[in-house]
Image (tube, rainbow, N blue to C red; front, side, top):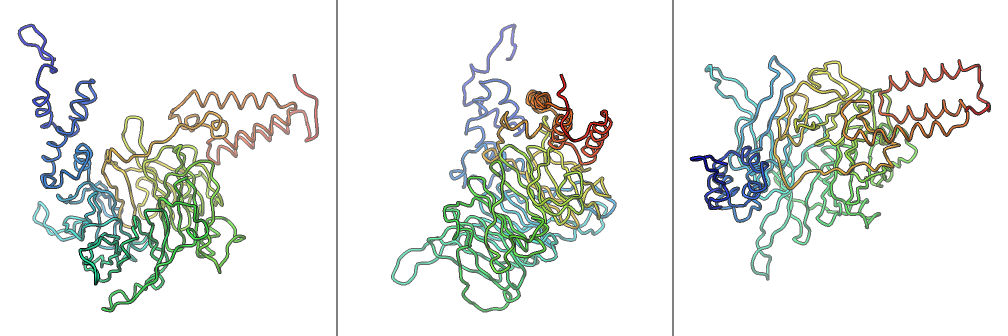
Length: 552
């Protein structure tokens, strides 16, 4: 409201076009905030006209491409929030730096650091090549700067991948899944759009190999599996089927052409009813998530199989592609796969970890291996999860929308900033996290965080059913970060009723031990309560394990 000569004048009296034109000069943050003040401004600030002007002001190159980008609000916010941040582990400076931002990029969708450079894919399918270079500092000195220059590597890209090992030294080639227009074959007119895989040298960006698929096959994701001489390319189709082919990377730089065979993966052959939505891989295993939230594993070496499942009972060295189903109580949304451990996030925002825990990389509070998915009770509703060689990272968001980075496992080399000795539980790292951070990655030298907010793509977690709260007590009871105190109180009342229903003191003691095992406590706390209950049980009048008189 505006006061003039004692009379109030409403903004609603102004023409809508004038109000939209004025609002379009506001920064993106202020335009979003203004839309939260009242219903009228919410409707005005949400119109396409306002965001079209804001988007063209932020990214003038989108003028010609504006007709293909809807809505304009999404485009404006993507370009306003895009950024790649990194923090080097070595050296004296321990601050967060920002890479060069390509002006032509329409938001950031994915990124991948290699040995010398960084590759970023935007929402229009343009793959950018961010180079490290020598630049002059403000003091006139020449210094080596990370990701300070960029070039366009290719357009029409859908996805890309490199060597799946955590060490970037092995990432010599970059495999790009792209769409290309092919000229018509003999006897036909016009051209067809076909998917292809192009291989580039990460050091120079030079294309060294290309393979083109039939126009009837459309892929959406690519992953790599195995070593250099037997590199398996996993290709996920739009229909949810997995295809694979094998190439020898040591021969890619030789100028010759040869034919490779594209075959249906065994997970799609044996289980044709499954529709895979996403996949993850490392050098010796692959993980598939279906549209129903199911998880299937494929492990190729006995050592990794033993680390992941604690046994070699079901491992068949003659049939390594046979999928192994994981048993989980809820639908899985996304995952993170390390060398010998992995993490899963279900539809309720719960994190399950499994595998080798030698350095405490599972975050369970101890260093005991887990052969089945184990709940990390004090962490919920993560934004991103990442598993490395022997440590894990979680990007989480507080109630005030501020973000923080938590990590566990080995802290050698500064990979857990603020915790050089590491931690067996997830602890808050000394890293300033950008407000719109959405994904992360860690190498031996650096920690990377990608910032880009997509209003049409965000994980919406469901509330845990009340009947499940008895088995999975809310972490707010132990961590103090209350999300639903009513559900936690209900679970505690149910626990008390279970104890009260026990007829003997021995039964009550055993029930209490069982409840302590279900509670979200670290291993040391659980051991303390169990030892204390055993002491009380032994001191309770010398009552043995046999039956005793019921108590009133």
